[in-house]
Amino acid sequence: MNFSYYIAKRYLFSPGSSNAINIITGIAAAGVVIGAMSLFLVLTGFAGLKDFSLQFSTYFDPDFKIFPSSGKTFSFDATHREQLDVLDEIANYSEIIEDHVFLEFRDKQKTAFIKGVDVNYNKVIQTDSIVVYGSWLDDNDFKVVAGNGISRELSMGVEQTYTNLLSIYVPKPGKGIPNDITKAFRSEKVVNVGVYSVNEELDEKYIFATTNLARTLLDIPENEVTHIEIKLAPEVDEEIALQKLNTIFGDQVVIKNRFQLNDKLYKMLNTENLVSYLVITLIAIIALFNVAGAIIMMIIDKKNNVKTLYNVGASLPNIRKIFLFQGSLMTILGTILGLVLGLILILLQQQFGLLMITPSLPYPTRITALSFVIVFLTITTIGFVASLLASSRINTKLIA
Image (cartoon, rainbow, N blue to C red; front, side):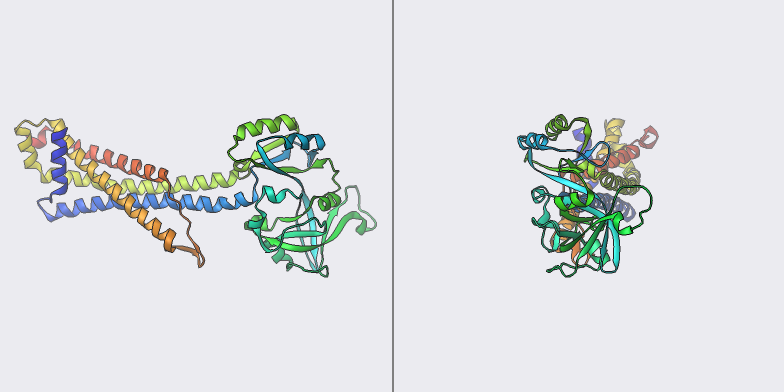
């Protein structure tokens, strides 16, 4: 093996006997470098894009969210509160009252969700990170915080006084058509004191209010909630926390973690990442089979040398290993160079924003050790297979 490896290094770094051989070898080496660099850029780009897409969920989604297993509400009384308060795994929790409402501001209307939250909500969710205008809620039951999309659609800004009020309507349960339409709805007039922004979908979905206002509008009793949002204590085992919560609430609830709350988004991002990886890998396979062509041309170029090695005692497997090692070395060195170039480009992107999504937002990237491992194993494996196929062309007829 040492003999084959030594000869392979000499062949790799020594020029061929003709310019055509040197050009073909250079093209093959460039294909390895570009393939490795491209695959690394794709993986780091999608890692950054995934982080960018999911960062909004860290602002808005809790560690755990408890839903009723059936119906719109579930029981949450003083006993439940006492049990949650003593759990070491839970840092904070917030009671949520949520349902559809109809909004009217001046002459514009919109359907949305009201999300009634208690005073602990800003300890569960980073409300400071989502409010872009005005302020968050206080203990005043007649203040709300609207989403940026709702604010735009209703042409409603942040009001400092109670001169321009937002009307919230909720239909009363019942059958038939009432004679007096005004009696068919529960309603409240409130002032919008803030605007939040998370993403386009959520910005058009919610207005935040106090739980007292939401309970009054939706006619939900004090001992019932629609959801409970939970923030776990640092470094807590989710499975242990989940088991304890299931013990407290039993079958009346369904508990989802942050991943489950965003399962569609995770699946979409992972699918896009996989498809992009496969496409770039296919391109790399095509490019790396230039290595096989270069090895075959090198075999032809070194035909007389191969005959000499065979005549002085080199076995056929050892001669094949020479060109297998030559192709493998070319692939490994090209992969390392491609990774270095890719790393430099990513660092430049992070530092200077070479590629911008908007004038103020550079394309997000994230460098991970897994990206290096995936690129190295993918490219070197393809290069090894290509070199193995090319070196297997050496037979007794060639060296006879």
